Length: 182
Image (cartoon, rainbow, N blue to C red; front, side, top):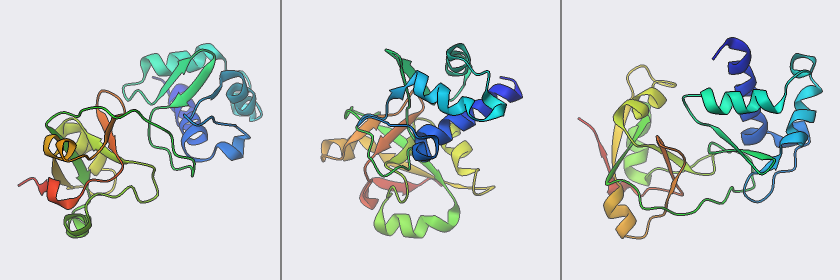
């Protein structure tokens, strides 16, 4: 995607995931908002005054990270919300193993307290090591990769939710299901 669409995608993510009130968006209990309401809010900024629904669809279809979805005249972010209202997800059985990339300095705390959502609504987990590494490198050049025994956690009643094909979500992951990859 070119720079315009990349920046627009980031703006949409910020609006839907972190600060809907700044755009006067009214998200429903599942994080959906009218496409027209989002477009009108974006158009208030001269940078986005010509944005269309086709632009939104282009971003969704051409993004490698699949952050948003449109359905029935509404749009929402798949994951990553930091707004107080919890976006309801349907529980799904995860793969046997999931991964989490994190700065090395946090591993001690994680191995004591488990993975917690902190300021987010869910703990974000990766379906593969490469994605976990990419996520971890946002905050540490040489991050730790945590291996999550998702199969056992699921059997023990820990809920997992499918974010997209590379991201799984959980409310928390207790430390007993986590190992640091060597």
